Every structure is written in structure tokens, then in C-alpha cells.
Length: 203
Image (cartoon, rainbow, N blue to C red):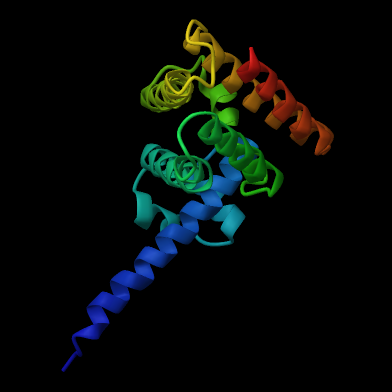
């Protein structure tokens, strides 16, 4: 007679395998882009059969969508959660900046921030993936703006400052520092990003 533990163990093994595949998919997408992420390409990367990958995702689109969802979990863990642990206002904005650049510098993804790369890749490609990324970036920018407005309420930033413009500029500096760090492999590029963001918040 089968023991009660075996079905749950099989499910657990399957979940671990599924997550391991998604981890590899995120690493690959950070370098080669989400559009180039296919079941065949991922199978080659992992040294397994295409049928083994297909059994987990059933379609290229589902693979891409699940990879994007898994990347959101990583960004939440690496950047947003540390920011939310800091006091509202400039403390939170500084924590977000430090967490983002740490995430890039530590090479959580070998291709840098996966979302910054997806923005450059998918901005002119219509379809459901582009729609998801558009929603992600709108939410991210709105979150930065919300934290700026909190700092204004606390008297840490001039009340009349354009919070939406400041959020735009901070987001731009995060992405540009990410790109230049990857291109030059020079940590000074991240320091320049930090300096730029401090200047934006000081205006």
C-alpha cells in the first residue's frame, strides 16, 4: 500500500523542478531577452529534452508569462521588500535605491535588471507580454511617486516639487546606471546613479 507521503513528495519534487526551470529561464531571459525564450532554447540550456520542458509549460507563451511572474517575485524580494522595511519618506527612497543597485551589482540575474532589459526589448512589440510589462512599469513608477509624496508630506522634499517628474527621473537613473554597469563592468557607474538620485531628491 502506498504511504500518504508519496503523492505530496511527488508534487514537491515537481514544484522544485518547475522552479528550477523558471530560475534558468529568468537567467537566460535577462541575457537573451524574453522574446528569444523558447521551450527548445531552454531545453538546450538545461541539457534536457524539449518534451520535459513542454510537460511543465505546454506553450511558449505560458513559459514567457510564468518567467515574467517569477521575475516579479524576485524584484519584490530584492528591492521592494527592503524598501518597505525602511521608514517612509527619504529613508524609503534611499533604501530602494541601495537595494536596486545591490541587486544589479550582485548579479542576481547575469544580464542585470531583467525588467529594465524587457522594457528595451518589448516596448515596440504588441501583445499580451507587452501589456503585462506596461502594467508592471506603470505600477513601479506610481510606487516611486507615492514614496516621494510621502516625503513631501513629511517635509523632507519641497511640497511644490513635481513628484511625477521626480519619479520619472529616478526611474531613468536606475535603468541607465544598470545599463552602464553591465556595459563597462564598472561599479563606479552605480555610484554615479546613486549621486544622480540624491541630487534629484535634493531639488
